[in-house]
Figure 1 (tube, rainbow, N blue to C red):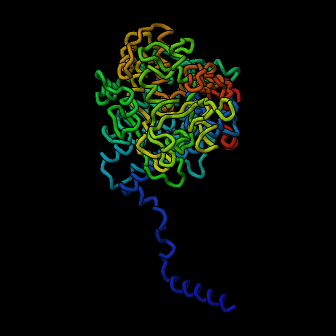
Figure 2: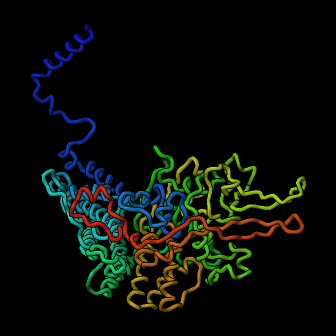
Figure 3: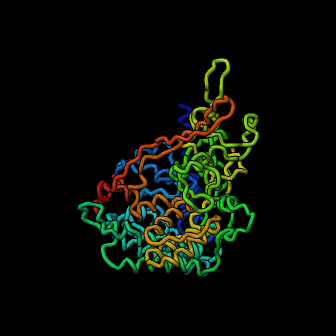
Length: 589
């Protein structure tokens, strides 16, 4: 009872002491900024903008979209690779973008709120305002470009909703969305600082415009939705009229605008005799800056609260380095890398089949860790078992004199003989591209930035648009620029052979960079690529002398995959459909 009276006494004392202070309830909160304070403080406004950047995602975050195309196997994504997702489950699309409508529209709302508030800010000069506006135009365009690539036409929201507004916005047509994205890109290009590092520049805005216009000219978006059965709203997933040639020309012009800036170039695009071309290509993805960086995002080496977040080394490097060994390249991807002379690799060629990793093109060695590849020194507790750091993704047969039998010793980077028994690859391949060997990934996160857009993509965009316009000679000039950097001879094909060669070039040059998921859809070749995923079982077979071995390669199925045409687009989540009766679900769901 005494304690109760004591607390009542204190409470009454506080009320008495403050009852004459009318401002007591009007104090500023200590854990947040008032709206007026934010929009009149340049530093707080920039912090607000920085927070929007979080909404465009990060390619090094979590599982990557290459696991949902024909580049890599990632355990746990079987239903996605069988086109079995539905409106109640679109999880698993992490990486460069979280495609949930809720998260995307939070960032669109933040962009729209910025545009409403920045005009009334009194403490910022016009030049700074324009630069900030340019950044936000770019980010709004980027978020919409991803939404459209995943879903087709989506609601275009132009204002910040209040409590009394009507939230039931319908989906805009695909064409309307493309026009909006292009408009925002043009606005950004006219306003942003042309030389900021890690922020949108004029080049970044024009390059994003190039990407979305190339997509818009592609097969999927010019099919009139013919693949979608009796879907009543093809305007949501395709153009339903107009001139496709004009679309190819717009895509070509947009890419040329970036080229004509004259400020980007292929990194070490003119290799000299004796230069390590594989290293040149690999360095693009581990250096902090190159001549072809257009839009990048830096990450802190601090591992933060979740040690796997934004940590490609830990996620994907082999388990024999105490990493998780996820993201295993498919054998079909590896087979598509050419020989050093530009000819195709074939398992039917006995010389090539006997030593499939010999004399391949330089990008193969920069992108793939294969059995026998020299990687980096093992961790201290394992270095006695392998002092050089050679990938061991195979088994070796040995003669056991005690039992008079052949036994198989499995390598440190396999699932059977790995350092831990819970990780390791399934295909006998691991990702090398983008992995910085200077960092011990089990403890440290590399500090190279994620490259959302680089100049090589722009050149490929330009070449593809030229092919669409039947300007094949011009297309080959730009494809061959990229091949020259890769140490490969010029291509000479025409017609469909040129289309196929270009697509393979794009696949290999941009591998693991979050392009293939969209490319196989917009080209409408997904049914060809969503075939069962193959890996290799590699065993060094014991010869008759019971001493030497000869490698034997056996193709194995590592993941069953099927294609359903509905997977051209993601389904709109059931929660979003329930909240907005004006939304129309994508076809075949």
